[in-house]
Length: 229
Image (cartoon, rainbow, N blue to C red; front, side, top):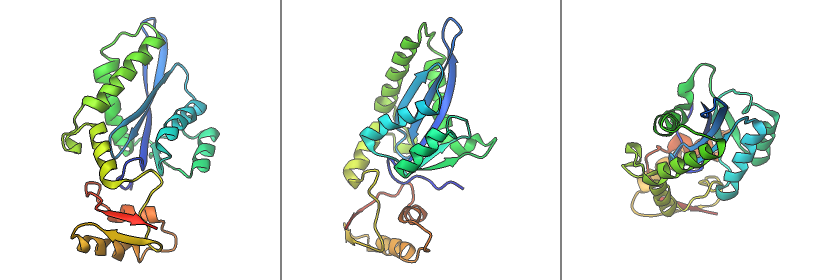
């Protein structure tokens, strides 16, 4: 069972969408979604995308945002390639593959891809690959900037991500520290903090701080504490 993401840049979801140009030539689009903020991080378009192309797209995102902790994807050859395995190892990222025949394991990006197809791919008759890249990128930017989501409290992905960043002051690599460091409370939610410490203070030897955090943190509960070494 996949645990829900509880912070931005914690879990990215990946998938491919296929379409064709006006002359019948096929092309594919790699879609990468931040599961928590629903931001479309990239839509990489090409006629033949392989594992090396996935790594290139992920590196471009990584330079701007840092690396996630987990990738959700299916068992396609592009995601199970040696280049992807090496990238994940070097960046400390765990790849969580969907179960065969279970697209609902990657429901967030599947839903996003359906919206992309209905609102962009099925609307345009792309004459060239260059035109496809331009129009798809324009749609992606509009999706992030101008599309409120009910799951985000009727905020756009970019608006939600900005508010989360301001409130939490978290980056991809900053996680709550339990057995080391100190905890500074903000506000009067000591009961919530005690529940967190009760869970994380008793975690098993094989359980990481991230696993502990995910087991305690509700995906919709604002983080109201700062964690400092």
